[in-house]
Length: 159
Image 1: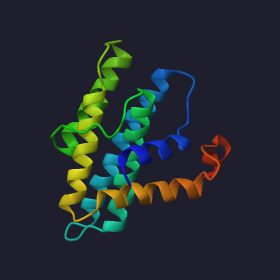
Image 2: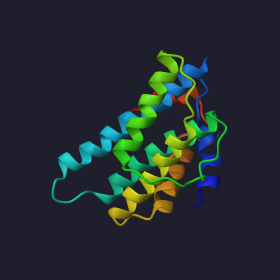
Image 3: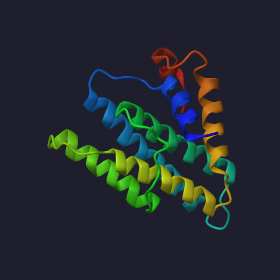
């Protein structure tokens, strides 16, 4: 699956909140939370990481990044940056905070592109095909929300 197709499918499950600031906070907090879930996998399984669980968690991060790009009207597949997963995630979260709390006009595109590049690189280190991460995430979302995002359905999920 290509990033452009993934972004198009992911946006069907994006909940639009009442303000841009809430949408941006939702995405930044989601990235942070999912990144901690990846870290938790490494603490649980010090000697061997469960690839299926890692694919799910990386897919969740990809969803937040893809939806953030959608909110900012930028293409996810514009990749040209280097960086580590942690550094790229931290930058996105910090920039979101500064944009919302301090009303600083910050271009998030480069940070989001750096993050998706880092996710692809991170998956490769663990022998995971990045396309599998994207496809697995879309399959999970289509199962949850076959008609697109639905607030009532989301409230009943035990996740």
